[in-house]
Image (cartoon, rainbow, N blue to C red; front, side):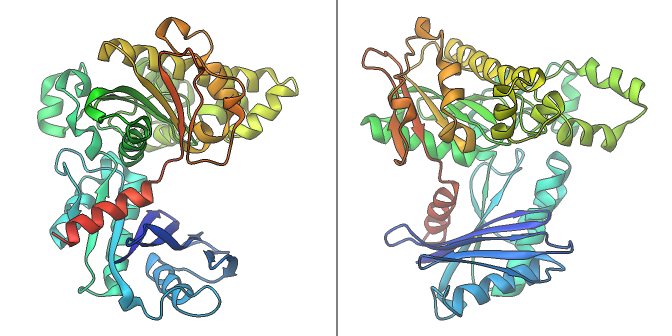
Length: 399
């Protein structure tokens, strides 16, 4: 079966078409600036890459162009859209209503929209994508939703509850949900397989580090804690997100800046993090370059991120009562050897020891970067959320 995997943003549509017979990617691409002037599609297939500027007033027109690129011209990989057996969608927030992946119904789309305040930027985009996919591909093609939050549903109450009045949880579902669950699930399973271990035997910390970053404690193959919270704003410093702060910092800044509500949320989500501290960029590569050139604020930003990752690893090792493996993944985790080096430095007391030469290796989906005498395995695992979504979609569609 050929499965189309979709990840919709408010102004973007990322896609992959995967042939599940060999789990091979037939094509992939990105529609950008949907609803904005200058929209375009970039399509990769058959060893080629094409970028075409085309107006996308809505996600529906973007889906129509995706179908066109997949079925015509040099980038064609199927003769007709009828060859696509199912569509799998990434959804960020499932709250407590969705504890597993689901075949889409109108009621499920309505529920995803209802809980959108918990992830307003993401969930409304997913709703638009789901409705557009049904419109373009028809009701006969099954759609499946895979939630970032489902992997974290195994957290115990002591990990997901906040120290606010309990009625806030009862009335408004305020609790820790986490994010990046599909990635944490994939890399933890891949790491266990690589090590030749049953996931049930392992205590693992998985570090998904990118423009958005989250860290998860995986004990016996199940999430027992994670750094992101009610929304993806919590945890370590990120590209433009502040991560963990004293709540009084927010109320104090509101008084000083005279901004409140959504304006303050945007300030914390879009103007903080690496960008806010460094004043240079939200991209770790740019900030690192600036730090190397003597920019003290950029150096501070990179030091803060590494320090916070290190703290989470230590905290989760304590929470699990041990540590067998640390996994680095995501754009930063997979590619930034300096971050891995500095996070692991001084962690020998936990049994972690990085091999400097292995830390420079590239080109493999999984690399063991631990020193020969390291008691804890340190792995780089390339995440593959799309494949995880496709596997869930196939399993549900085939019953």
